Image (cartoon, rainbow, N blue to C red; front, side, top):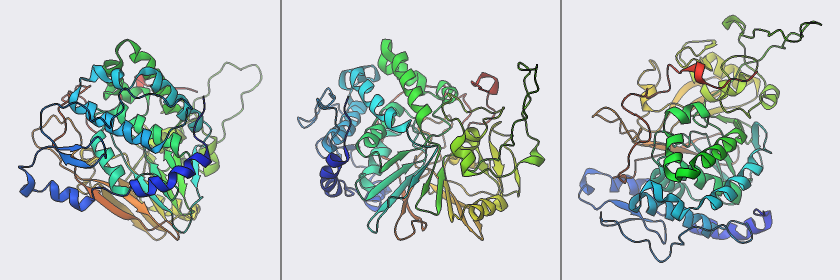
Length: 468
């Protein structure tokens, strides 16, 4: 199987630059969503240009511009047009066909080819990717949680501009669960990764795990959409999740990860002779917690279905599950049962220790922030949580009007946001907030949203897969 070469991507770069410019700006979108426009017809992505246009509620046949079913390119090399068609087909399918009909437009053989190509790239990347091939005309777009909200993802890509030779993307994880289109969202991002492997970076979120996807809907979504091939598709997705890197360094001064910082792991005591089978308890006391090093981060074993909450391989769980706090110090995250809580002093120490100026993490939506005293809400899609001598800590959330399915009548109606980092130092964040694409296509939840806890608290840790 062949995947894209650098030469072919460069040939498509100019087309990407011109055709991926924002076709609907954040201001235009928010204006369209204002009360004055409430009588407008539902916005739909036009299948030929992917521009948001007005359409009738009644299901309509796909435009002749769409190629359905999607086929894998004969030479195994993706093109910009292939990805644009993929996004348009998924948007059309979400509005016009039943979830069980997805294999009719995206056959499992094409799924296998895409995931195989992407997995080969992802598994070769280090735990912490260095995004340092930036030039004077480069920009880096950082994206937070997406949670299967397909139409908001497609809008974000148009608003920020498609990935290109000079437009890099870092996605901070949580692509799936809760929303009805986690699979389609993840596949779109894998396609961009295959097309621009050195310009698009997909980091792992805590929901890219076996435990979370079994509770919050992604497993059932895949099994529903692919029926008798569902278990195969789900297993392939889990394998791909294991290959996702944990963190990134943008330029020289920005650290991004889904949850946050991580601990130092003391050396494991050597076993004495004759006691090879004796297990060694490994549960550092809170008083012994300290910030880890990037050498430790890159040595951690990320290829696990669920990051361990006990044992010696704790760094992946820290990076994916930790939360900031206004209380000084580093302590176990007792609310989540995994990861850490860290205060402003730890943010300052982390930034100073590694000569950084900015931490961009995600992981907390409006539901989680509702329960976090002293920290800002997620109304605008981002919060600046810590401002310290060495720099700032930002929480970024890119799923507007979250969660898609809510058990209460009153919705949060939060905006989503993305961040643009520009030259020369790529450490001065420019925030872009946007509202949700409304109305969303009608869909059923793939989990019991009225009973499942919204903010990932009180985990059933005993059911999580743990590895030594």
